[in-house]
Length: 115
Image (cartoon, rainbow, N blue to C red; front, side):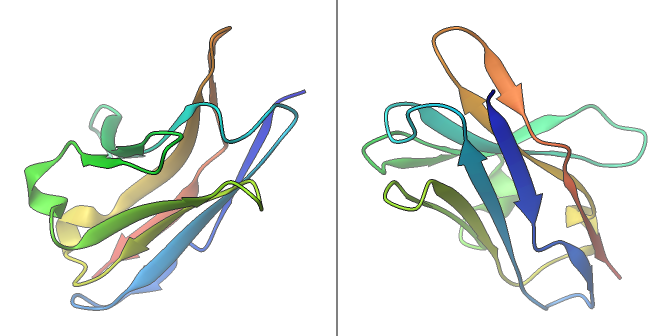
């Protein structure tokens, strides 16, 4: 079974940093696009960043450009999101997602709170 397990969330003061990680298993990692989504309280889930199997990143939210960095390690089956200069508006549940040919899969999320 496909499993995505996020970790690394927490509470941090504005201007601080966090590094989120996602451990993937149950499929052939390294052949598909991976992404990070977030959902703020009372808002819809939005895609923050994605990264192709080749490692090419793309940032979907203008406010995170220059502050968040998505990366992957295909040898370790992991996906990371380095978050610097965090702002209160970055608060939300962050989800790892895998875009496979059969379907899209999601982890349970990790909470990020910036105050």
